[in-house]
Image 1 (cartoon, rainbow, N blue to C red):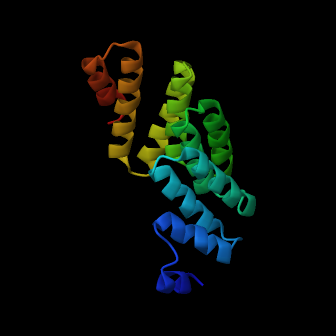
Image 2 (cartoon, rainbow, N blue to C red):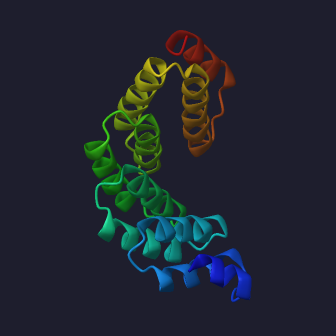
Length: 168
């Protein structure tokens, strides 16, 4: 059990702990998800992807697992794969504003600003419904700054005007 692993100190890191725990319970999607998150946090997106995919074999309709996998793809500059997984995430959980926001970012990264703003509008709409106005404002600002930096044209006035007209 996990208690035995902890008591015997058969691990050198948290990653080692989760790897050992998965050996003891290979059908745990939660352990695989957590190990994927740990790998993502230390910058190993390939191993994060591996464990998220393994967890999804056990729980294929887990929207948070799908969302985490899309983050791993984004971190490894695989925007198209991230977009595909985000669409699946939204199929599973249509009221997931963070998925729409990440979809906006990934499509903007690939150069499709029109779609990016469509997804951003949906994320903002959902955040407003959920009473998360701060998240909505930060998301809009982040996408505008990303697009401005991508174009080499940071227009803070335009960002501020957009925020005042669309988020409040």
